[in-house]
Amino acid sequence: MAYSGKFKPRNIHKYRGKVDQITFRSLWERTLFTYCDNKDFVVKWSSEDYNCVIPYFDPVKNKQRRYFCDVWARIRHPTTGEYKDFLIEVKPKKETQEPAKPKRQTQKAKTRYLTECATYATNMAKWEAAMKYCKKKNMTFKIFTEDQLV
Image 1: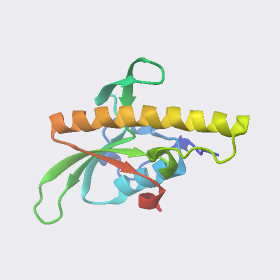
Image 2: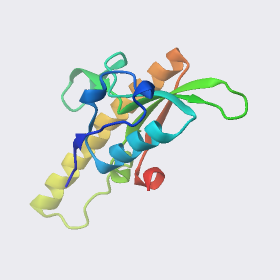
Image 3: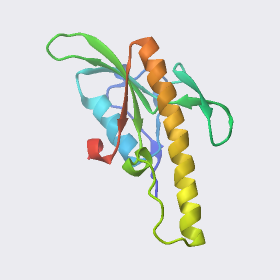
Image 4: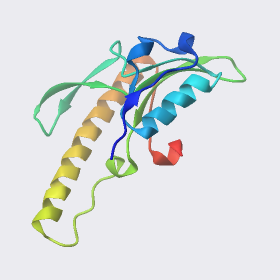
């Protein structure tokens, strides 16, 4: 079950956007929002920033779409003081890996496999577009799974 809700930052000055409209769509996103809000080296951050729209071609729907990354963050390096911008996507680990074919060929297993394949293909298209976008903008694209957020 996915958890969602409104996030209320403690450090309002760090958030870029409307602080009363910050929505997390999973507990992992909420964990990342809290991290960005509390860490001093995160200078600015935003969630699903509409100033950062990434066009991509969705191979499943066979059409052009728009991608809004979960978090944009500006980080200050602790020793050099240099700033670096990041786009961060939060996903379950299983959605970042190619799905395994089902061992049992039941209808339910086949349907689940096709759904997982579609999700994986869409994610790959989004992330390829995000990497190209970040390269042009001198940013870094990261995918965080439960491994990084626990």
